[in-house]
Amino acid sequence: MAEVAGGAERRVDVEGHVFASLRLALLGVTAVVQGLGVAALFVHDHPAGRVAFAVPALVTLLCAVWVVRRRPLPKALVVGGTVAVLAASSVATEALPPDAHFGPAHWSYGLIGWHLLLLLLDRVPVLLAAQAAHVVLSVTQWVLAGAPERAEIGSAGVVVFSVTSFQLGVLVMSRILLRNARRAAEVAAERERAATRAALAEQWEQDLRAGFAGQLGATLPLLADLADGVLDPRADDTRLRCALAATQLRRLFAENDDVPDPLVHEVTACVHVAERRGVEVSLAVSGAPVPVPTDVRRELTGPLAVALSAARDRARVSLLRTEGEVRVAVIADAGVDFGTVTGRVEVECGTYGRHTRMEARWRTS
Figure (tube, rainbow, N blue to C red):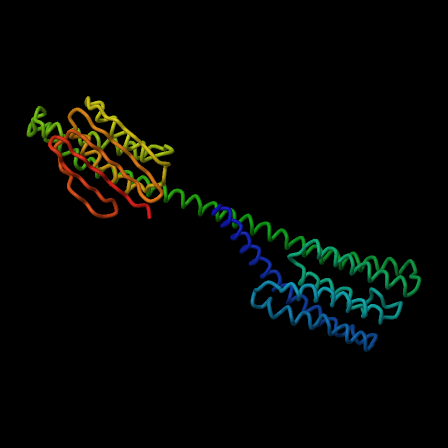
């Protein structure tokens, strides 16, 4: 879910950057076209035409407040600006004489489309509807102004087609740029995820090697002393050290297995080593599985490995899990005293004659 949310957020950032850059360019184009239309305004000077010319100019200035700062246009400005420029186009077209439609004096037809692009660039369906409404309204006003001749129809068709196709071409190019930007962002995100996975895999491998090295650090000297004859394999102390090393290594191997309940799996691994030595071990597990960090599992099972490696004939292991704590306890016929340890994992150990009772407790909260 986090990855999906991150992808959606990255996509929004890319779209915002692309639209901000395109709107900045459209702002310049609209301002230039508006300035070029000043001369056409005085071909057929009319008070309504001058007012209509001022409306899109005001909309351009208002848009510039947000576009220059590369911020999205407010919805109120988009709606109000769209209605205002379409109304201004209608007023300016109505003020023209019948023979001036779609000619040099018809400044509003070529200009309003750029305002619509500026306002509705990120709302394609609304933009297409507004452009269609602009064309239909302009053509309708032209037809109602007087029956046009065939030559006038041809000239008007050329103007409508050229202006509309050019502005729609800008819209198409903007969608292509947006698509390419999204693809580039997706490729960059995939590379970032791949680099993250590689770094995590490398870190996991280093941690795994460090864990094995830490366990083997106690085992290798034992093997070296056995090979050099320094230790007697028949001695009780040597056999105890070998049993402890075997239990620790078996627990370490189990730590890296992909299982639903790692703690039970590691406790069971320690039990199996003791059973292979002939120790009769009973295991009782109660409570639902709770997430236990790897380093905490090591501290919970460490005293268990010591007690089981020293057990002679029998041992009883219990694992209790509640919402508030996890306990690993063992009673074995071993005369070892693990002592009392206070920390993240609390360990209590007591010796009663030939029996040792050990309990490791981790509070989850």
